[in-house]
Image (tube, rainbow, N blue to C red; front, side, top):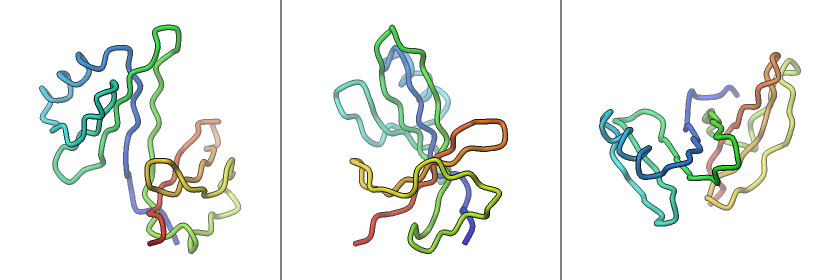
Length: 114
């Protein structure tokens, strides 16, 4: 079983308000605002964008998540270095982390079992 394209982009920011306005100006719609400096945006049927405000003393990062239909059926090729196997997240998905040949970490996300 292979991945099914891009699921989400996780973006850290030092200023939730400015970042939210920026993406809304680019056509993204705010679907969920948590009230604590984070939220979820969507632009059409594409991947969702999760934005979270972080303290000024941290460097903002970005993480791209690839979609997996079924974590239990997913078997990565030996060419894929698995950093952490699938595990449940606090936000309702199952997540695996892999490393590409240049050392970048990628998140693979699958739905939880009902």
